[in-house]
View 1 (cartoon, rainbow, N blue to C red):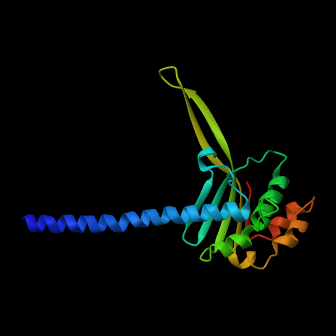
View 2 (view 1 turned 90 degrees about the vertical axis):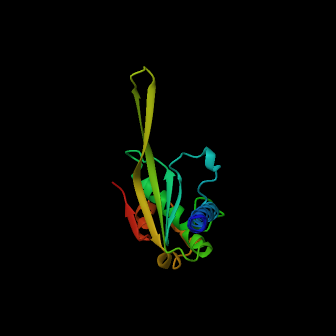
View 3 (view 1 turned 180 degrees about the horizontal axis):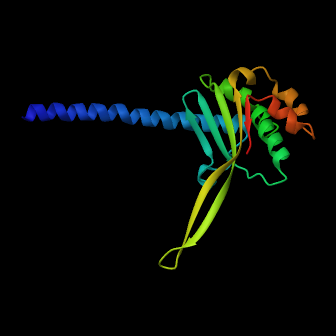
Length: 181
């Protein structure tokens, strides 16, 4: 009886050991991806604990999705189309390399999506007279680029191209996909 329980215990510990490193590996990949996003796109320069809770980087296999709090006002669609395209293609800062640098830093990555979202906040009183706040992230725009397309584009040239009134149409045309409601 003791030997049988001993083997069950060892089997349980072996199964647990196999699961824990996988979770830690996923966190390491997300941390590596978040650092690369900060370096090559210039996003998330604030400490993680100072960001909005929905902002972040999620990696799923060969795809990376970046959520960034940036509400789009009724008259801000063209500005958002330009900014999303430019940020993804060249990065937010003059020192960033954009998606091309991100793909070079993460060789197994095949697609990157940048999502601009807004927060919808509702405040309701509860039965005890206190207020309960709920916040929901609502996507406003999604910009997607593949490795193949990004590697064909030169961020230095794009910095001069993605400016002015033509940026809202030129930027999205360079991407694989753009969605706005």
